[in-house]
Image (cartoon, rainbow, N blue to C red; front, side):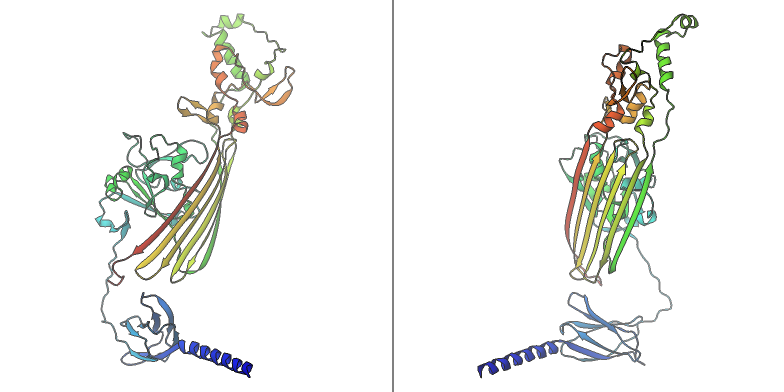
Length: 495
């Protein structure tokens, strides 16, 4: 008997919960018309306290509608082109027969738009800006072969000087907006990404005066496919927005963000080839050897002296074969560089949230042997609209760079690189050492330190091919940026 009673109570509770669930689903209906006839395709939407759209429908050919609302505390909004918008509380009301009125009919409508720019966090009309600015929309350059921000700006911004720092991969460029000299050695423009001073630029420990090219190259590691727009502020008045940091000009980068709609997937691939130009025509080994003999035995270029001097060589000398070659050192250190760039992005969102997730991978070999660069970059942008006044944004980016560079060879304070060494190396020397009998070995040849004083400069020059394959000069970096922003508009969009 108790068991039957328990089963009956369970069924009763289930039916009660089900009936309460049905009662919570409120269905409203009605008709929308003007002063003369019903209106078709009138937008009927349920909006909450934050003016967000919860449910929506449209009227049929007879002006009738029926829809299920989620919360009776919300409002129903009726809108139609050319008619006034009507908002009514739902409450306990189930039927809405609404009459909407025509808006005032005008013979002519004039719309005036004021173009604004964002300079330091505020939207300012362009005609009211007191700074010299120039904008670059990245959509104009889709499909082109550049792979960094500085390459995109090259030759497109008046007054912006961009010079490559060196031939090393990832060495970046030197950019000047306001002259080429400075008292404290810092002439680099300020880099701003999405309204924030980018990376080490805002670090007090960053030494601008002594920073090498790789440090400045880090400031431009934003993938060009992630960029929507670049604004360049060239006038000193940019300090009004960015203070003394903007004294050398400001480069403002705005990245792409998500948009409402179905998720869209995009993929792009680029391949670039780089090749060193032929350059100066160099002597071969035989010509260089003859030039050495003339310089040593006949410095005055006398015909009589040249006729009486006769040289005899001893092939048994251990270095004879190593100095009896025709080596094109410039050709030995050059190669065709190849760069592969892959980029993938996902973009989408709904009424409350939008997102954009992207990733890029670059694989590059330089035009000088021994150079290789791998770079992986990712970026995630999320926007959540709490209401029409409150928006939460979060940005995350990570860039990993693995750069195998040539070991530096400096003359004074300047790195001339392996190509500079190749232009100075004697062409009668061999890349690999040879035995006294002329047999080629697998060992790289290094110039004897006992070489005559007339050729003392050759004693300090390394074998550039050996340096490229044996010397190590690796550079690895992780660049991580995370940002969280809460935006609250004091005035509603209607005010």
